[in-house]
Image 1 (tube, rainbow, N blue to C red):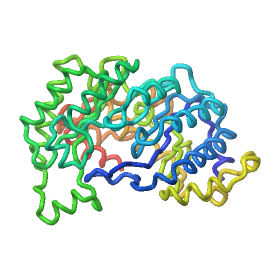
Image 2 (image 1 turned 90 degrees about the vertical axis):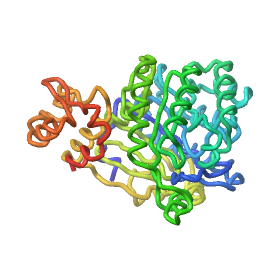
Image 3 (image 1 turned 30 degrees about the horizontal axis):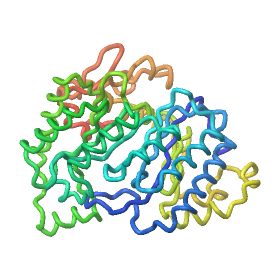
Image 4 (image 1 turned 90 degrees about the horizontal axis):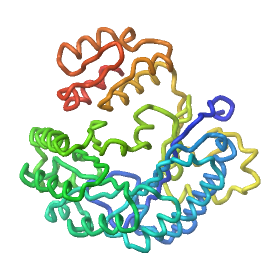
Length: 399
């Protein structure tokens, strides 16, 4: 049983999954759905039920950060976001300084919605811009234009949101270096406090993957994508942005607390279908179907929550769970820590595992250093710029 064995963490990050979308982007393989709007009211009730269940076991843990993602959380009526946050604030010990983020699509952000978010406790907006080129946005299946994104950004600022993160994508079919530099230039005129940039991955089962497979779309060029990444690193640095993780930049002091919790391999709880959790020493995920998830959670009577043991047999909405042994925890902590530009702090690692990673993987680290993929001292281990470009190859060395 999970309940009998997991360690109640002092602090935890909370993720809430909203799987609803107006349309599905051509590259997206996330657990998201269109044409399920009729399910929204009962789904929100189910989320509140799962929050209620976990609060009985984790109420003593401080909530360090909350991320409401999807899907498109901004697509559903804002009062449902308010309901969810009211439940969280009443059931959990939310740290006063918690970062509380809502993921959004530019087209959804009206002044009225943003005011509701603000009053509900949201203090950070993450906006999926992806590009400031309309032709590329159409190729991606996005439902906003570059002007929609710019307008939404300023509306959010006017509503009192200082901490706004913008997401961009590079390595797109048909995208060239000039278009990428133009997108970065437009981004910098907005001066957001946080920026995430992700290279396109063609995931099997998505329309874009199929179009490339069928020859209807040119496969993105990996070398051009690498050049785009290098260009972004240079431009962002010259404009006073700190690159603190492989794919993330921030004005110092505005690094994402929620994502840092993941990269430090600390405890997190995922609520909703397909959401993943890590409560040491267990990692588990919920069933993916919103309908099945909603049906199960709404059939549990509130008074039963206190007596439910946290086992897969009793919690039918949990699909997969595994016990993470120390060896795997160490490997994952190294991989995630190397994503950070500051790298692995050796003292912190020793405090956690009672072993020096340089002793544990001596030959591996020396080989990576020889190949100029990694650098280390007595206090840290981190990737070089070349290592960040080839990070997936580096990570495989520890598994």
